[in-house]
Image 1 (spheres, rainbow, N blue to C red):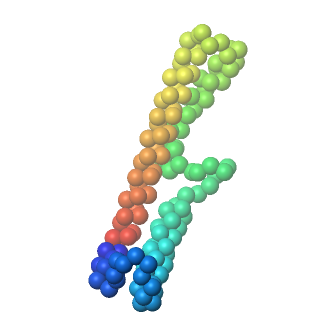
Image 2: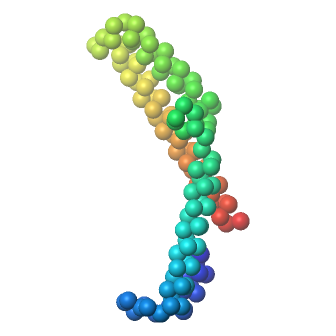
Image 3: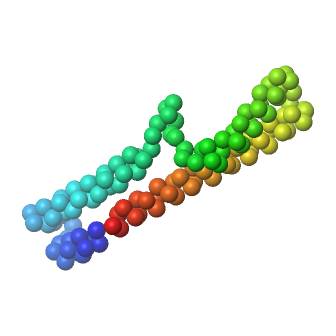
Length: 126
């Protein structure tokens, strides 16, 4: 990509409103190359995501989040079964379990994004 910009800088003037057909053609070609480059990136990134119940599948869920989610769900159901009393220890436990679950899920999603980014960089460098 840098090579293309160097070629453009060598062959183009920077005059405002330049109507040189060669310059316009070169800029149009480079613009189309940039658009196709970003479309390829978008396809490679969005192709890695699979949908499940209209939400994105999170790789690593079973390893890192499932146990915490199950614990959160159990404490929530217990709190519901006890009439949703907000002044109880069950409520505090449910809130703390929920915070732990959310933090684990956030961490898992960040790791997934990092892996996607690294794969994208690796694909573009090869």
